[in-house]
Image 1 (cartoon, rainbow, N blue to C red):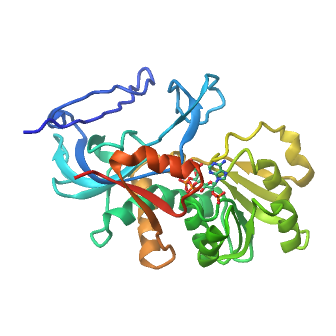
Image 2: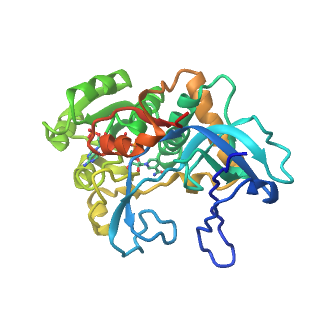
Image 3: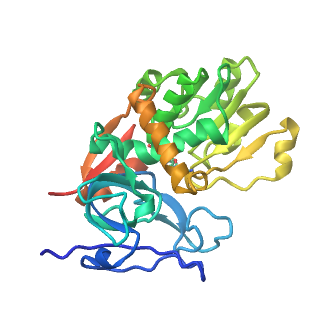
Length: 338
Ligand SMILES: NC(=O)c1ccc[n+]([C@@H]2O[C@H](COP(=O)([O-])OP(=O)(O)OC[C@H]3O[C@@H](n4cnc5c(N)ncnc54)[C@H](OP(=O)(O)O)[C@@H]3O)[C@@H](O)[C@H]2O)c1
């Protein structure tokens, strides 16, 4: 039998320390509440800036003061269950499952994951669609229905509107009855953003998006900005909001935004939110409910999944280089090398 590599990250409740890293051969047989998954497709998402050593959540926490580094999150994949640990009855060998967020390590051929993070994939959904929709779609659900509730009549500004999350955000906000304004860097991306429901598209590499939003809204401003670009757009995004508007900062593709004083929100009574998917999916029931909402949105045609870029897993570095260079639009997936 070929040796199989499994990666386990255990959170030790007593110490709160993340990251017991084990390289194992069929260890799942001895580990309660785990399943081994042979991955077919991994999702590729934007690199994160963080401290070089993983502390706490390891993400963008302000408490982190170490040197900045770029790192691949590798936190989502779809595959076939190849082994089941003792005591698991709800998942069987051969089931198709996916997971998002934790544990990291999805850029691998096989991984051992806690059974309670395994999400069953609907039989009719292909691997690439599932890998493209799980993290990005669930994030989109949280953004448009929980972090800020988009309603008919709202005007919504979405930065990087042709991106992986951005494309889904525009589609879902449009379906909810909002007027969507999208920003993109190229005319080619503008075409996709229009197809995804943007009534107005601003090519922000050529036009001043703050001035254009003021023009489009007749000076009124927008109800909400969804900003994944971060440093380059953050201040302008605040300027685009109407009084009592909501700034939803959910990513930082151009870098971490500069700190702002709370008093900056005062002149327009603005709300600032910094949501992360993991805090909206803290129990298995909620995780499955949110995933179910996303699968239903795909089935109902609310979300059209754009799997625009497929790379072999061995070329993950090239995928990230292209993503960082803003050469991609829609989703990027990595397929395990056969
Ligand atoms: N909060 C959460 O729970 C959560 C969950 C998932 C993802 N995210 C975050 O959401 C963001 C979007 O992720 P994604 O995978 O869908 O990426 P993406 O939007 O497909 O790619 C990044 C896009 O950002 C834009 N961009 C603007 N300035 C950039 C710069 N200096 N460098 C690179 N890109 C720049 C580019 O679009 P243009 O060329 O059109 O400018 C680029 O295509 C990421 O920051 C990711 O970490 C957050």
